[in-house]
Length: 541
Image (tube, rainbow, N blue to C red):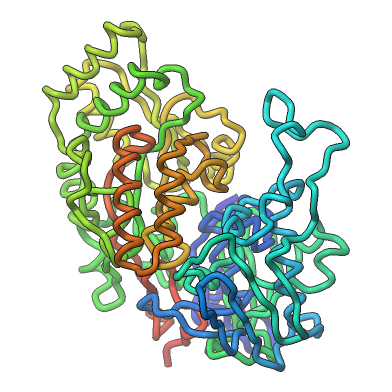
């Protein structure tokens, strides 16, 4: 499959695909999206790279993470609870239909509606009436699935009201000062009327309002997007289009980049960390980004339940030599984590109570493991499994992490490999992971809360572990409703303390963007969130 993709995609010109009309596409290494390309369904990196370029939201984020109005003309509130949103006129979808206030309200209601089971429904929770769109507890069976014939009380949130074609209001359940900051995320993108006629078909051939429009999707091979001529925002495409090529091996991506057969690699493989800056020169990218990696702990895995399970979580954390891995495997392109968020985000602190469990301490780790064994033994034949996808280079850190775990805890430890990223995500969604699993988080918007609520909030869309703690949820709610950013960050730090008490996850390290581009392209910039800003990429002269 990979070889076929390369034959089809790596041809001539700027290494991109010559479309036959003189247009040459910029090629980007990617993978197969897990879900249909519907904004409120897209919460993984392969799909989000496409969705963020074919849709435009009320606001967008520049390379530094600064918020700029896009479809929105203004977003105003006197009390931080009722928000008045006015749209710029003249915006259209790529099918020629207008972008209106109704386009946003209908999209948000569809994304929030429980039976649609969208991955990003959590992001609508602050809007008044969100709970009315969810199944009530007595409508669910013992497994938590909706009983046959049951429907939520409402289909639309009472907190959304269309005033005119260019104006709508959003009433939140409580005042939230950073609400406008979130509105550049995919959950809040608008949808055309055609979407609601056939969502399934739309997911294969989405109609957006962004700087590009999707023109071709060959599953497991490539996705092509080309400039949308009627786009009127500030992110006007400076190239003929982009082809996202699905790879199953990052070393192959990088070798194609070196041969100028691929234009942009967003993640240099670990095998090239020591050499890529010399090999690529000023075409190498190595900069801090809003990316954090953890090991997550599924609540349904018996070995990590209860008090003994908590001791095991802490023991595993203290048995991992993060400093050795970041220096030897990653050549210092990763920084050992001291919390669940990221230093690039305002409010970050390295002094979160409870984070001493992130320090490498094999003696204390063994003590905790033995204590757990006395309480509820897993036995001498126990093997710790750490799951991830094999189409990226995660085995390069899982193997040495397993080595230090073996040495410290005197147990077996193995890489539990899933062939592709989407198969790995499906296993997480379906709760079939047998041990622990890798969890990476790329910020959706620049706020500490985005590293906490979507992953660890009760029933949140990216909470694949099933973690739930009322104290954590309440602290997060207080942070979201705080009068100032500084006060909010204090609550978020307290919420992190709860996560350390429960060891809901095991933070590992913060990422740098380690990427590169070919000799065929110029003006390649990677943003605060680690993604390349594709609309401004040009072909080299």
